[in-house]
Image (cartoon, rainbow, N blue to C red; front, side, top):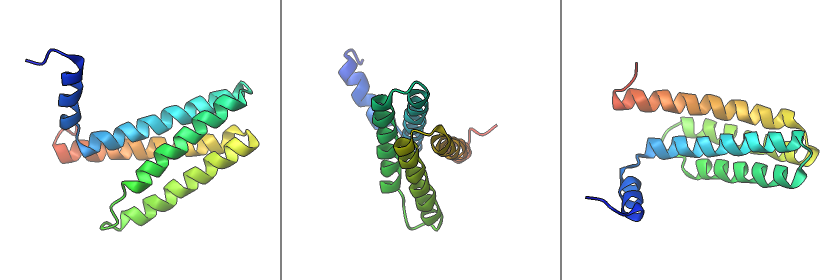
Length: 125
């Protein structure tokens, strides 16, 4: 029986699949972009910078996780690089439009990976 929070965390860490980790990365990037957009709208430029930079860091992790044995990796790399470019522009210009574009791409990709994950695991509707 697992009693301590540390033991529960360690057990969950071993039970997390690569697909779940990927979705968690997307969730993090989406959350940080949304926080960055809110900060731009509030003219809180320190919070803008912090969150958009965190989103870029998550996207860099997505890039690092690419498996170039599959042709789609090159396309994903280009999309990720474009999203980073959008986030940099949003941060530099304090403009929500490029950040919202990156958010749109992140959301679409997250949904696609979730569907793919469910179909692989046989849990698709």
